[in-house]
Image 1 (cartoon, protein in one colour):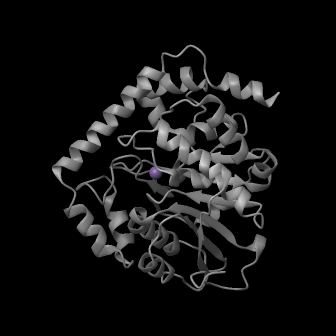
Image 2 (cartoon, rainbow, N blue to C red; image 1 turned 90 degrees about the vertical axis):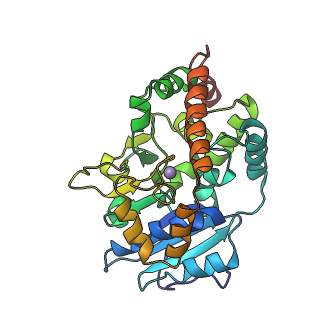
Length: 328
Ligand SMILES: [Mn+2]
């Protein structure tokens, strides 16, 4: 156990609410805002443990995050160590996703390791670091999964961007009405372990070796198809001018980041949460330093992503056929 693992020893196995985030240095600033918002909405009668999985996270960043610990929210760090699955993922990212690709970072894949690396937990919640909590994350954890393996929100972008819809239905072979966003997950870790989730994912990566639009999210949808419970929209909301009354979690997904752009919908929730952290100044500097050139690059990336989806939508045989075959 490293000196950065902190918190309450009384926290044990199943009584605690385990919440996972996966980050590296460039995510630390806004992950801090997510964690701060989480802390403001927890129940005083429960214990929580925020577990940060990382690869490169500097000592000062770990200190600043660690200092956020409260009486009933522990903060723990876990460095991703080399293993064969990670090697496959790194190779995949290096060869299949170019530098212009928004999803080229291996950090996105770390959530796939949670079940395997944390056998002490049977259930857990995962949140992206570009989220802001507006309600107690314990309520998300409490959602009864029944026989399902995970709960996740049906991805709204797939329903309103025709290229994404075509991609999901033709290239992956999943009805758009079933395809989920992987930014907020409730996971039955026991079931994920039983499915050998991480092995299935890296087997697919090796065997089919295709470049996908949102690789780890796509693999999650492919492998767990039929085993996913649709999560209430309120737990993974795209920011908008008028939030529903019972909004529970905001997800600044893809490019509309308040730490990059001014006047992003719901940005005040983000900046309020950021204020309570040691990263507020950094975040403001990040936004000030976001140049027109970076903005253009962002737009080009969105366009490239949509174009890629449109191209892949024309393939003849969807990947799900191979996944189903493998299962039998
Ligand atoms: Mn996200």
